[in-house]
Amino acid sequence: MALAGSPGGAGWTWRPVARDALLARAFHSCTELRGRFYLVGGLPAGGATAPSGDTVVFDPAGGQAVRLGARGGPRRSHHDAAPVGGRWLCVVGGWDGSRRVATVAALDTERGAWEAWSAAPGSRPPAGLSSHTCTPVSDRELRVAGREGGTRTQRRYGSVYTLRLDPGARTYRYGTPGPAPSPVPSSVLWKSAGEQNRRHSGHSRTPAPASPRTHRDYDSELALCPVLPSLSHPTAARSLPPLHAWHHRKGLGKGQYSTCIFQKTQLRPELLHIHSYKEEGCHTASRSGHCAALLQTPGPRPGHQLLLFGGCNSAEPEVAGHWSHGKLGEEPPAAPHLREQLARLVSTGQGSRQGPRGLRHHSCSVVGPFAVLFGGETLTRARDTICNDLYIYDTRRSPPSWFHFPCTDQGLKRVGHRTCLWNDQLYLVGGFGEDGRTPCPQVCILDLFI
Image (cartoon, rainbow, N blue to C red; front, side):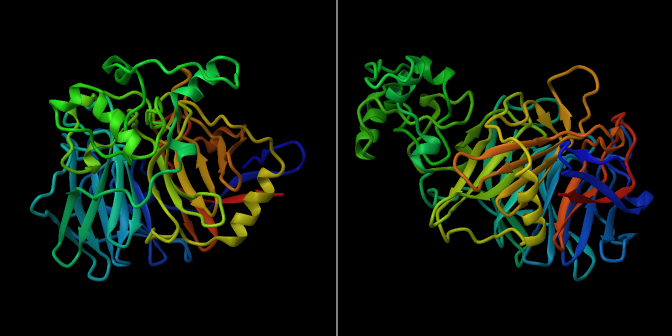
């Protein structure tokens, strides 16, 4: 394969290490558990609407793939999966060939058997999910981000859910996680009217007076989430003073109205309730085919934040969760050598505040302070939409920087693929190739040349 990278000598490529027809699929899940990659479902070819129901286990150490003989596996594509308790592989949502679902199926890797888990009492699952993300935030808790939908339609905004799993009872619960562990830093999530006026008036030191807010403003502005409590009950929420009073109680100055960096949604004040903070009420921009990265925040006592990339025309990431120092129960695997190589690679490039615009169905893996994105489909052009670009999001400094490493090798184009981190190496598995229809049977490793 051709070497991609800068003319100064640094470069990268995907080096094939295994090939098996069992691995040829796209829009599947690929999850590392106990040193094995578990591939579940997916589409066997471009244009197919019926997802596969098989499960393939790939041994990266031996380079061998075998089909799991367990019956009752879920027929899914455009789903996600996550390990739970070091034993179970939980498949969440996806397309079953006729509709979107939000159910959970679990593979007990010790017994080699699929189990259909049931919703716990009080669970409030979405109607259905596809092309969403599931990120482990503790041993038995996932943060799910995606658009709710049914057979033919989806909502015009995204939602964030907390999914709690109970392997002992074989149940799952979508519901209320309670208040956020800690507020997102004001420099990230909050904007004041004074700051916005300074930006629009050439960074003047004297802010213009903040104009009174109206309900129309909330249609065109950013959604109130994820760390805001709800407004007062529906009748009182029709007037803005309760919101103003809430800001004074939280120590915000007059005219400082909380607006999250999330893009426009259909959220209106009169639809919010005061009863309790509900994760189901957290709305994001309408995203599908995005990725999620759980990354550390810079500082002497770093916390974590969950960022969503892509899946819409915007190039801006969104914060889908924030945890203060020591609050997160799930840490990404260490990869010191790969982390060092990525740091050397980005040192040869030119960082930018602007990330990839209109990218979806790409892959994303977290390596220390870096989020590594590859491939996908771009929404910015009508032809030649399948990509083979490598993007690295570097959070070591504030503000974070994007690094773009393009590639001219058409054979590396992928969409609907997955990347997995294991043994200090990043693996590329499956996906459709350049034509967007032919599944790739190869497993590759990311090679960096510095």
